[in-house]
Amino acid sequence: MVTPTALPPLPFNPGRVRTYLVRLPLFTRLVLLIILAFWVLELQTMWSVVQWGALIPEEIGLGTMYRLNTYPFIHTGFFHALVNALAVAPLLERFEAEHGTLTAIALFVGPLSTVPAGLYILIEKVMLHRNTSVVGASIWVFLLLGSEAIKTYKSHPNFSLGPYKIPTWTSPLFACIVVSILVSNVSFLGHLCAILVGYLLGLGYLKVFVPPEKILRWIEGKLNLLGRLPHYVSVDQKTYGRYGVLPTTNPAGEQTPLSYLGSSQRLGA
Image (cartoon, rainbow, N blue to C red):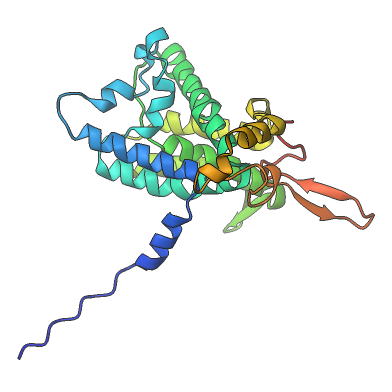
């Protein structure tokens, strides 16, 4: 009687993956679902989703401004979509958990998509006179890496590479260069624009786009979002408090706010 051969162990724990997916906050889930939906739509051949929603400088006009928001959700294939989804999920999850679902929606549907897109169009079309299209959630990956780099720079200004001390804020730039060298058909300029906007976010210069907390509380209470929407992150239930501010007590008994976004000031009202 032949004994069945045992299957090799999986390189990951399915239980942990399931637990991680179950714990994803609402907006992060929606982003991943929209990425999946657009990839499925791209499988049909009657209509090109990429051509419709890509950020193409020459195609931007009054009737196609939607491209400033659709391009992060659209990808050129399964591998492209999978890699970007895996990369953006933990970064976006942390952002939403620290900032709240409404703030994440307001920023990523708004300035964190349109500002890097506008900067890219300005350089690509006006300065370089080119018309290279851009798609993919990697724009958000490098933007969030840029913001994280500013945060890390405040506590750890340098990291060692052999005998050299390298500023921590430059780490996304190195990642951008490495990805451009190792991966074909990626936009170095698009990723660079995203990093620059991430730096502005980390330094607090985009705080003018953050909705005031009073308005967020009013919307949440009026619509009862916390009670109606599963996995919703409210203003009062974020991981680290309002915009990641952690109060620490100094010897004089006063409290000093440490901001997630690399500034001693809070965003919003």
